[in-house]
Image 1 (spheres, rainbow, N blue to C red):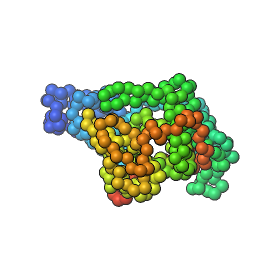
Image 2: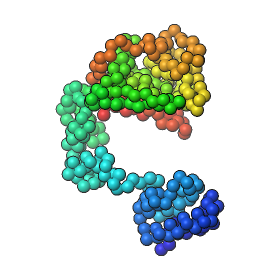
Image 3: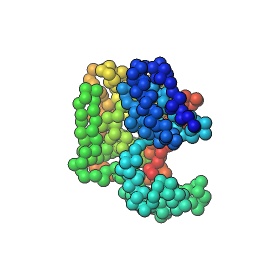
Image 4: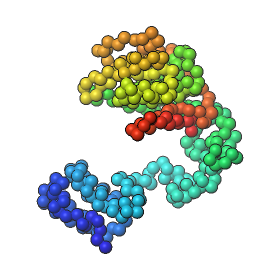
Length: 347
């Protein structure tokens, strides 16, 4: 049987940007894979030993399409990246599978399906989840597996589980457009998270309220995200690339009480206004973070600056919640209709 890769002509490689000498060299390397029948294994070998960024993308694409001929016919997955066995063996999942005395991911899956309560309790212990009130059952399927209740009757706030490292351990490394790095320890991040959570409570927000975030991934964004959840509220994620109309649709769906937003975002050395996108949004007061002092921002009556918002109280007391209480809302793309809100919870 002729392997798909061997059917690639040198002229095809030349047409995709290789000179003839390089095309002939690549064709010889492909011929060495003639004995490999498994298309996934063949692609793994090809990607790790033959392909490189120096080859035109069109060549990568051609080899990928030709390699997975049988997979496509049988409607099987065609993975573009397959980790090496030694890499997989070093993952936390592989280590956990071994610690459980199981031989494979398939065995882990079977165990989780057939023994869901044991699986849930073992997983909680492995992740060192911090429960304020422990669960009565790891997985309650008394109402049917389609209505399973995970960690029933438990109370927790997942943010507490984020701060189990040593206080002086490094929690966040953040870089700006100029390449300057900022470092934050767990103690510093915890204190900033507490100031956010307590600041929200001081503004009158209640557990269950929704708070939007629209800003780049910065140290303050991390603290805002954790602080919202620590306060028992949920995060509404708003991409800073959204248009005014795209933001408005998502606000209408989720009805957030506040929004953390930067005045502008800096990309490739250019400043792009951000706060302006929500300035006309009625009933959504902003907590404004400034990326620079260059932009003249006219705050609305209920808006507040980040520094004025932060509470002086840096003691973190996370609001206890049920495991299935909402923590975050993300959205589908909305390319084929209205975006769909997708809630995440504490577990």
